[in-house]
Image (tube, rainbow over all chains, first blue to last red; front, side, top):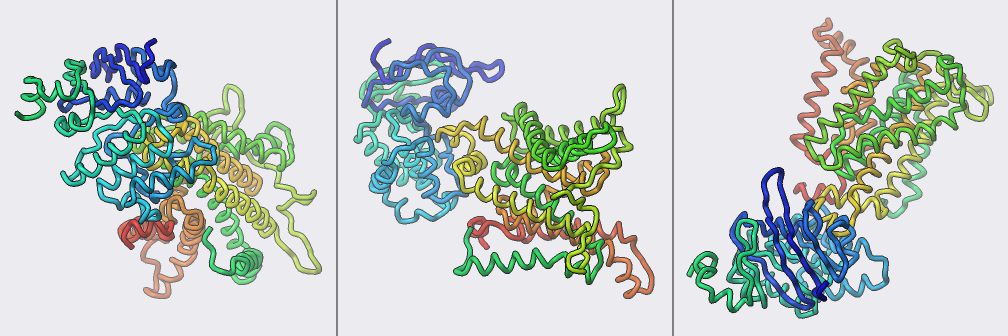
Length: 236
Length: 349
């Protein structure tokens, strides 16, 4: 296989008899920031869930030279592949500190405390309220916590599912600042977003998905300039 | 556990209370009430077992009493004239825990993908299947003796002494029900200890993570399948131990002791006490065993004194008041009577 960090070949996902993802292929190089954009129901989230092995799928998924399409989902974080699920999925009746600790659940090394410090540096709002229940945080803070929890697993590849969903515009900006900072630390990112404008702004490359297929793949600049993308997703 | 500054004082006081309770109750209210305490200890064990499944792992189980039945029938079959086998209790009880745990896995395995209402219905069916099997396994080969149940079960013996017989200590007679009380309390404390250790362990944290969000738990690297099965198995094994004790204590088992209503009662103890909070669950178990008995004995005479005659059948009144109490608690204290402190904070109390 090629030396990409993630190589996906002909990924297919079916919900009962309905095909939600119909043969998606994509490749991500180490250190890249790539987005997957498309309309509601195009199959973006399904693709991401399939990559995280949360859904049964056909096709090949190669990650760091290893086929992971037969692995159980819980084996991925130990290999450095982390998912921040759609709708944030924080453990709402646990405190912020406990949520972050769960992110390091699979780890047994001695550097967890150091990583916690690093993440607190990145997300100072969380440091101020470590004993607050996650369910009492605002939506944006929960999204930050979910990202922080994923970072506690020391990911090499971070799969982000709609981090802007349901957030106020100002909060969306803050969350994306955090995502940029994470990328700057060398974490490769695959971002699924409905907010195409924002996604193309922060990512170098993008894939456009339409009814289960990838219809366009190019640099963000080229996509943002593409007449079809502008008409369909950028409202221009 | 968050104890005040003098944990040993509290522990000592609770210890003395547990030690004296049957003596005081026996002397003032009679041995029938010591028997109620015995059952309270059994139900507390059941509630603590169900609390692992429902409270910690968040898996709604409406057939939990099936594991109690498995433990009880295992004891009955291995220590009664029914098959002519007479194993000692200390051998059967661990076996009962193991076999009930196995049944827990049997229930858990096909229901791994189910949650909430769907899981509740499957577990309800499982509980009924076990009861119906016990009811009908008297032919073609008589295993369970069917609806007649199994009688003449060996009482539990400790150091060669049958607990069903009273014992004289320095001219003071300690009755059989009191001896059972002490045995049950010791075992219940053991189960409390195991429960607390589990709660604070990696497994306990994994259970809570699954309860809160299963996808996120997987993303954190938790093997949700194994961890759920472990919750079913651990919860069931507590029920199996309690069941074995029940069979040895009653010296009789029959399928009608293991109906849906029993499962619901145990679930009420967990929910009413405070799901996931061990002291709350113990409180719930105690309350729901003692209060209905108090009504049973007190409702008739109280009406006699108030109205000069018994207007409402005490049994009907008991269920009516029980239902009203449940509604009131769920309306005014939705997290239970004694919830986890953090849970209470979240509910805005």
